[in-house]
Image (cartoon, rainbow, N blue to C red):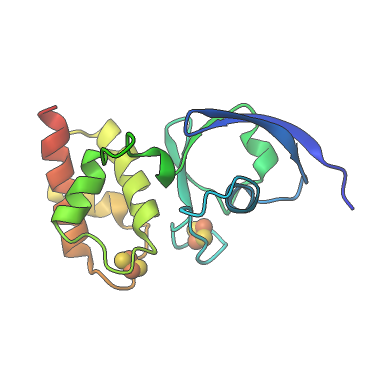
Length: 159
Ligand code: FES
Ligand code: FES
């Protein structure tokens, strides 16, 4: 068995310190070790975006990283987006504007949108479309997703 490596990171505001196999993917670490099942595994090779999380505020595909590479980082998974019972405006907007159906792509859509709206709080529709184009959705169709991102931008601007 491979020797385990010590890591220390913060996930959704909670400090974690423990040992992990050096070859373990970050997405598997989140799901299996931390039991944060909201981060989904789709293609497992960086194409679908279902496994997107925020690493130090930047959207990354957690299937393309090893857990040990996140040592020292601050991570946000979909479980960390709401404030208790209060949904994040992006979550509210997806709910209001039917930005999801089965929900498989949704954690990736939301966290990708989060990074995008931090960088571009007043996007055009075209920019929003481009921003989420790397997250594949098999059911909703992108119109509602883009409607949701635009609505979230509006709410967040007024907060
Ligand atoms: S599971 Fe990571 S990009 Fe598809
Ligand atoms: S809502 Fe089902 S894959 Fe996007």
